[in-house]
Image (cartoon, rainbow over all chains, first blue to last red; front, side, top):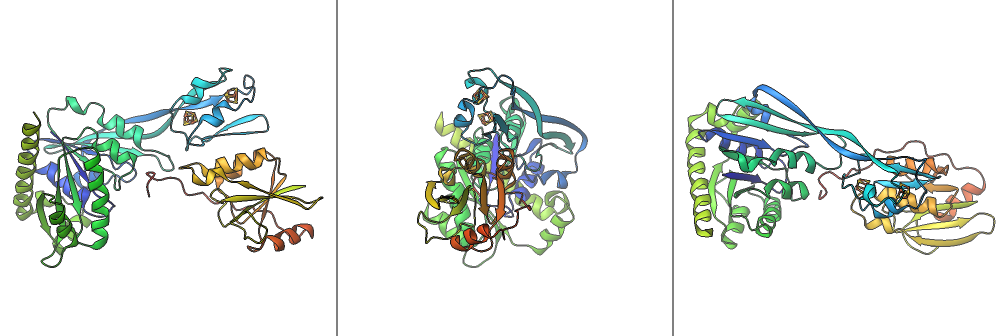
Amino acid sequence: MRIAVLSGKGGTGKTFISVNLAATAPASVYIDCDVEEPNGHLFYKPQNVVSERIAVKIPQVDSALCKGCRTCVNFCKFNALAYAVNKVIVFDEVCHSCGGCQLLCPQKAIAEKEKEIGRIERGLSGNVRVVTGMLNVGEASGVPVIKKLLHNSRLEKEDMIIDCPPGSACTVMESIKEADYCILVAEPTIFGVHNLNMVYELVKLFQKPFGVVLNKYLEEDNPAEVFCQKNQINILEKIPFDMELGTLNSNGQIAVRADSKYKSLFQDLWCTVRKEACDETASHT
Amino acid sequence: MKIVIPVDNNSMDTTVCISFGRAPYFLIYETETEEKSFINNSAAASQGGAGIKAAQSIVDSGAEAIITPRCGENAAEVIKAAGIIMYRTINNSIQDNLQALKEGRLTLLDEIHAGFHQRGGNS
Ligand code: SF4
Ligand code: SF4
């Protein structure tokens, strides 16, 4: 089963929930798709890490062959190409490696060169296989790294927890494409509702079964809870606001491994999510 | 000499636009004839690489100089490759800047900012 964890913005507790959920499952794979700022591995401190470099193809123009027709410049919808003084200029960090310019060049003046944009690290932390995607600073898009991260996800036997990038951009869409179930993490503020609404729209668009975890929960007015009730969204769990958690987090500790209170809380969440996801699969078949 | 200024509107009483790549219009000014025209910056609406696209249309306009408050790294690369001179604006008044150009009081824009790379595309 593949579970994606989302939130409308960073700092909501998305990584906290993903990391602890994966640590609760008997055996699981934690996949950090937040490639611009992967934090999960800081908690897991995985052992025996193996690193794989991820490269994309960038066009390389042979000026001797180029006739300056500008087909390539006009085609590139990412504006990664410019033409000045009889030369095509390629902006590597803007290029999305779609390959279109190479295909269209009537002079066959465009070749491809490889460029490293990031890497994937795989390691072990107890019952969790930790897979982390890392995008090099300044790169335009993390999508190629995420594609690679999830490439063989259908073949995984263990349950997968996918820690998505914050927001609802194309990297998030890529991350949830293959998910069987989505967990939306929400903060108890008006801003939190705005962010929740963003990911709510996204999972609806992708027609994914989902539920909400209310994080930093206090026994007072909770706009995120009201939002869920109004839209008939299933609330999977409420995680109370807790100072102690801040200390655990800043020490890079995993709550379920350090505190039995969290262990039982996340066991409950794990059961709820499994049941929800299975019911969904059953009702769809 | 043909010069270009990023501007907020397509009339001479408008102001210099603080953004280069996202400026709605470019004023094209011919110093000899004092002829003025405006071009639409089609790059303003693009998702990413707006600076590059804007720089491309300025290169294509045949400009020899640009007066702008700022310019991103990528745009600057295109502009430099085309041998176009980049001056820094003294304030947001078009007339003041044209006057300063005439009197040779403009300085070159040398500090180029790293630009706001599209992080995630939606932020
Ligand atoms: S399409 Fe090919 S020939 Fe035309 S400008 Fe681009 S590289 Fe040159
Ligand atoms: S490969 Fe695609 S994105 Fe990259 S420069 Fe060519 S057309 Fe643009």
